[in-house]
Length: 144
Image (cartoon, rainbow, N blue to C red; front, side):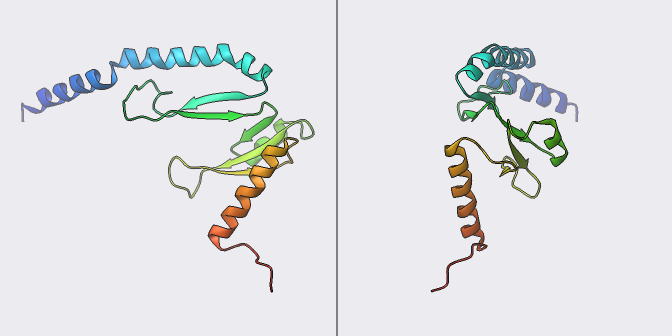
């Protein structure tokens, strides 16, 4: 059983070579945080906000990792709990509820709780909602 510590050490050294040491990963994550904070005001002035997520956001630089980015309009607020809706001025903000329960990990269901003033957002939400209804068999088909 005394060979297990050496095996664990070998695995740790291999992982550090592959993804970086804990210090390197932490520094990458902190640099990403800092860049996001610095660029956020400029993005909002341009009319959108952006966030990176996934393994790159967490400081890992793997060749097989994809890039996960979310873009949204600054007056569109995403909430995770209906109790948060009171935090926003409804006429000024479009509130979107993000539900993650009963879904595959990494997926979320979005529901627009208040109307969007952006025609593209409103159109896409309606289109996607109709597609989901059709896929689930919940759509009401016109009778012939």
